[in-house]
Amino acid sequence: MLIDYTAMCAYHVDSVLIAGALVFTGGQFTTLDETAITEELGQIAAAGPPERVRGFHSLMADIRPHVAAFYRDWFDDPLPPFEPFATPNSRR
Image 1 (cartoon, rainbow, N blue to C red):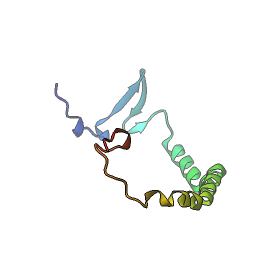
Image 2 (cartoon, rainbow, N blue to C red; image 1 turned 180 degrees about the vertical axis):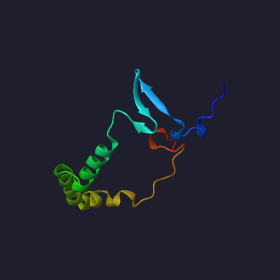
Image 3 (cartoon, rainbow, N blue to C red; image 1 turned 90 degrees about the vertical axis):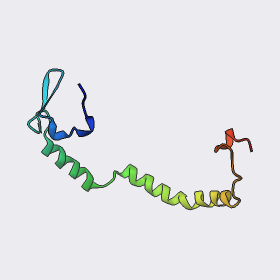
Image 4 (cartoon, one colour; image 1 turned 120 degrees about the vertical axis):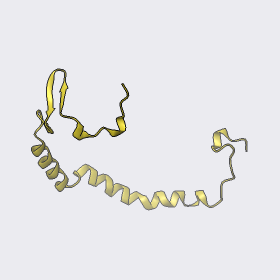
């Protein structure tokens, strides 16, 4: 039997069984509360990033000028062409 997987879409699925348990039927999950999940994700997104992530962003903003200054002169001189393409494997 020849199956064209590119023509398959989610709306072609009526029911899904996992280990004998019906988990999806008629376009709805039977084991998940999609509305509750959507609401919870909305609350998490509205709260913004946690403090540890905000602290990391702050740290990155503080050190960025120093890192940029450290690497500023690295690309002043153009690199010679390498063959084939990478320095470790180059013949030049």
